[in-house]
Image 1 (tube, rainbow, N blue to C red):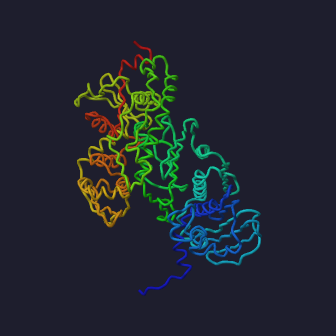
Image 2 (image 1 turned 60 degrees about the vertical axis):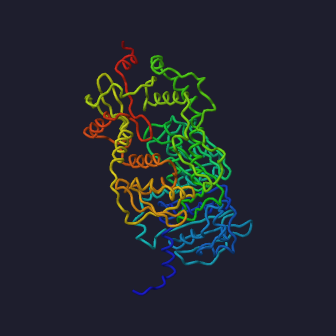
Image 3 (image 1 turned 90 degrees about the vertical axis):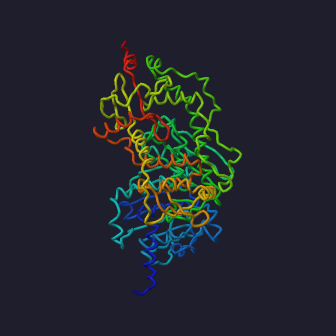
Length: 602
């Protein structure tokens, strides 16, 4: 078969497929343009989920009449003029491909007024351009997209119901609005107002967004801030009093762009550490502002990924900020817990001495002089030696919070809960509570076992014993920071001993060639782990095993059948040290006498 040049319209539609997947893709690109136009108010609407019509109206700077014919040309943009501009971006859009792609798969009409001149408009119908005509809004720009994929029926058959597509469009607007709280946003579906966000503060915008789908106590959402030499962090996070069973509300923004980055999400969860029960995650909206020369967004068609030159340093500072500042809320929370306890409960769980609460107690960052330096200059590792032990007041606060949650409460005295148990003793399985805990009776004691953390520990032990290695049919290529690049060259044996085969292609460029069979479904998480860690061999080993175990384990909320529960409990009761791979105790022991006293029996 001879090689031929594609028809321009065919090539245009192929290119559009990389950027425009569904109505939400159109919404994303149009809102980005409105934001770049310095608008203070953005109104978006969809009809029939966006398949019939998508409209975005803004009050921004507008577009000059002479520029309208260039709007839907390939690689035509006002945001980038040289190669250097790509490495110091300050705009949401930059490729000049969005309107071009939209115009190739729909009918798009753009009407605009530029700086008090006469308004004008232009229509491009599936790649066919009409002349510029007079008329348009009195301020800003109005973009209307009609008949998306109408001439490509094959694309429409992969879309969801109109109501689902409309929700996706609304979520895009909601996601964008979080990074721009000083601007107002409205969203209409089939003529009905579905979202109305007034300009406000960053924290209030997060609360407004959460209020659309979550029942959150505003006072338990906290503002955290930290600044380094070339980047700053701002977060709106939940206190340890509220949490979720998934990571869906851990959102990362870099220079106002929503980014999907497992390593940074992981940093948030590391920051909370033992403050949350096993298998639980916080609400956290993290906004990272970084020197534009240290970040590259030009790596994914939808700009959902970014390369950070100082990622290891940012990861470290996220952990440090959350760990230190979230702990500061515990004195208030523990006081509220103790206030709500009955007299009997207070006898069982005595109130800690508030003089133990030191405002200076925090998670100290190692090498604090290095804060703000590039990760190319200084690497960070997360070994347990770098973490100071928790002060006394923090340990007491954790205990009191756990009592209040009825999650993983412990007796106040420090004892080994397995000290009086033997492997041969029988137990009676009583059932499952809240699809979170397995309940068993053993002698005069009742045991509540966190099903996710328990299964995670059992799997963790199993993973360490099974290291069947399989080569990947297609190697996974990835980039690393300079400190990780150096670490891998010097300590490649650390991963090789764990069954992970890596190869360096060129400076900062690596590929994953083989992994243990148990890792097959989580290659992406393994790569993210490698990109963010350059530490002690034992910590690397434990971290990787924990990732595998956590992904394979029974989840909180799963219904566990009786046979599975009994088999799991047998293995749990055989453990010498009942802690999950993250170091948390996952068993609550309630003594018969304690329970009797709690209800007034003697």
